[in-house]
Image (cartoon, rainbow, N blue to C red; front, side, top):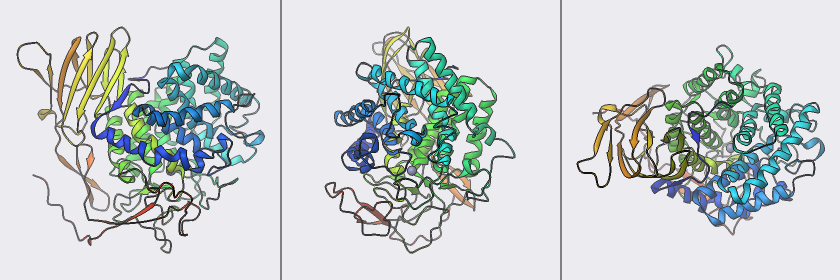
Amino acid sequence: MLPWAFAPLPLGSIRPLGWLRGELQALGSGLAGHEFEFLPYVKDSRWLGGGSDYSGLNEALPYWFNGLVPLAYTLDDERLKGQVHAVAAEVLRRQASDGWLGPETGDERNFWGRVPFLLGLTQLAEANVTGWKGTIVHGLVKYLRLVDVMLRDGGQGYTQCRWNPNDCSWGQVRVHDFISVIQWLLENTKLDDRDEEMLWNTMDRLYRWSKFKWEDWYTEGRYQKVVSDATPGNPEFPYLHGVNVGQGESRCPQTRSLALLTFPLGLKASAVIRRFDHRQSLVRSTWNAVDWTFKHHGTSSGTIFADEVQRDLAPFMGAELCTAVETGYSLAYLYHALGNSLFADRAELVIFNAFPVSLTSDAWGHQYMARSNGPWALRQPHQRSLFTTASSVSTIFGLEPMYPCCTVNFPQGWPKFIAHSWARADTGLVHALLSPSVVNTTIPHRGRVVIECKTDYPFSNQLMYTISAESDIDLFLRFPSWAVQSESSVSLSIPGESGSASKQTIQADAETGLHRVSIPRGKSTVVYTVASVIRVESRPYDAVSVYRGNVLYSLDVGQSMTSSLPHRHWDQDGDGTHEFDQFEKCRDFYFNHTKPVSLIRYRGYG
Ligand SMILES: [Zn+2]
């Protein structure tokens, strides 16, 4: 396996501080932290013996689990840990004798819905080695032995999905996330030779047998820079749109698409595959993916225009909340895998801007779709939707505005960002995604290191590090591409040493963006100043976006808020439901601007 540019740290090594801790606590005390208690897709999931899910793919509980495990362990919250432990134990207890995980039997078996759950299991095994790793690895290997049998039996559950042939597309177009779970097993566990060989063969089969090769899609002449036909009739439909999975017991009337999650997942596809097949051309494919996606479909807030179908650059269009969290995760993964700073810059941009703007401040309400230029968020059932498929409720803040995937998938936003914010280099630690946090880990041959970073970044320019190291290490600080080198600096102070702090000018590596600071064993402090200026970027239709660092400015036009009972996604035009009345904060919220927005003129900066 090709090594990481910067190796990820085990979940739980990094804890947020300051404003970031507040954001994470809001998730824990808001909707995300209470879904287990009342949301039918979680509480009464088919995975747990109940009868609820929003589609026959049975992906709701897996999405929730994938976000709640890092939320629980990053917050170190016993209540939330209890939720994920209970679910992990029940799902593994229900594992079929042949190894299948999940509620499906016979022809219903389909690999896709398991993938987010497997990602959650690997995180739990990292965060709680003594309590969970052995049980989880046993369950994963048992499941993968069955996958091996099913693949050799004509690709059952992967290329042959007899229950619904279309559903095979989901597992294939997102197969790299499944492959990343297998890579985790190979890198983090000791397996016998036969299982190890089986896992390598499984990775190879999964990749080769997928109809969807993202490296083929991200090529000149094939990639659609302008999506002219945003319908299932488009011959490139699987990369642009999706299959109708409103089957089984789902009552969702809309066409559900692959597009929303596959774009951001596709960003990292080639980098995942490259780790085991070593093709250098996959690096170029990754760059094409990121460059073209954001150039032709990117929003000013760092996410991707995609209202069910990927759209172009119209400023009134929107982007789904799932897209923001998956984009943030994929870009953070790319920085760890390939080590180019531009991926990290983009990971910060989307998580600092596109993600939080879709949540109410107490994190009880979320949007399905956010628009950078949407001055209101209203339910407008009698108005024609502006969007391709998203309905007129898709911009309100609520329990499940439009499709409920976001309800169970959004909790991973902050936790995955924090989990990727530090990484390990050969000689020390990398502060990859700048933010307030404390990291506590062991570096091979160098011992334990604890580094606390206090900062209001990205709302301030200064980061203050307090370091305790058992031996000499390197601290690598990422210098963002937008920062002003001549006004930025690093100062190192060692308690007890006479003289002032040693001040360094920034000498960041051109590719990684990293400035190296040699840290002696013992205690020391570092002050890192990342100077920024206000900058203006041109957008289509004569629009501009205004940034300071990685923060996008918005215009306060004032607002009034009203609320109603929460609406289920299949009853958007009704009066709402009383079924969740015990959670009084579970409401739908509507925002209207209170001042007319007149013509705004930009008069420059300086
Ligand atoms: Zn979603």
